[in-house]
Length: 73
Image (tube, rainbow, N blue to C red; front, side, top):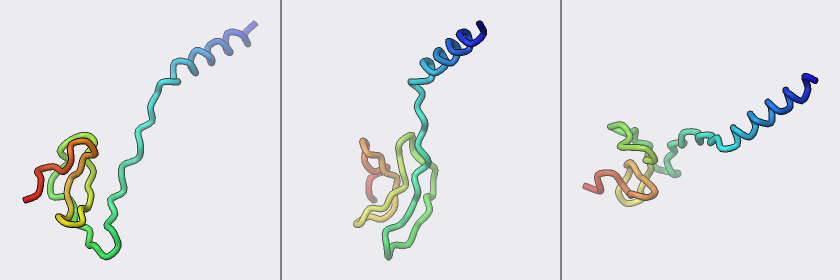
């Protein structure tokens, strides 16, 4: 008699958690071969920005949709 209640509870819990999203691990900041790593001088400007290297301008915060933070000076 107790088994159907536990099975129903487990099924309800599984159905409730099917929409959960697991956040990805923080990106790994690595320099391309032959390039010195330069640490960020200020915090990330927002969600989705990653510290990345640009071959022409160097290191900066980049967002896949908004581009480079503060542009290039």
